[in-house]
Length: 187
Image 1 (cartoon, rainbow, N blue to C red):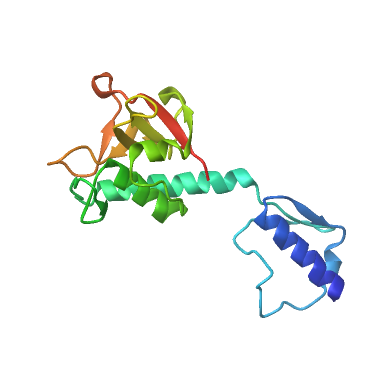
Image 2 (tube, rainbow, N blue to C red; image 1 turned 90 degrees about the vertical axis):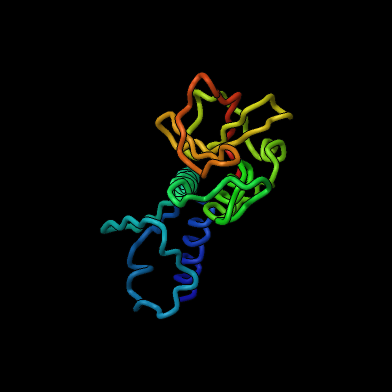
């Protein structure tokens, strides 16, 4: 029984750190009745079972894509809520551009970017706008002196809190107001 707990603990630890753990025999784990308490089991990760072995796979890349999806989904939801542009705002009552990006990353990914575009630059790996992936930030202005930021949602579109008199909305990248660079948020 102690050996089984050790194996299950190692599988759970592997799940947390995004590695694959394989036990030599499924009998080691499956001959015991299910426990009522599953505090050592990670049930939110996919499990693949076969006749002679049990494999738990938790690719680390899936965590990043899940986070990006959550960011994109929340940003799109906010774009449909008639949230007005409010300078310095970072709530559903009103937001400015960096307030929007900080709010979305706080709520969807648990990442604090700070409430200033240049501060947010320090939380990204910079890239060309053409390399932006959904969930990345788009910046306007030169690096170290950016003046506007938005969240890229794919298909040449982004969610922004544009300016006073407008609401948070989805906009399309165009040559008249082209982002200067993009950035992938470091977790």
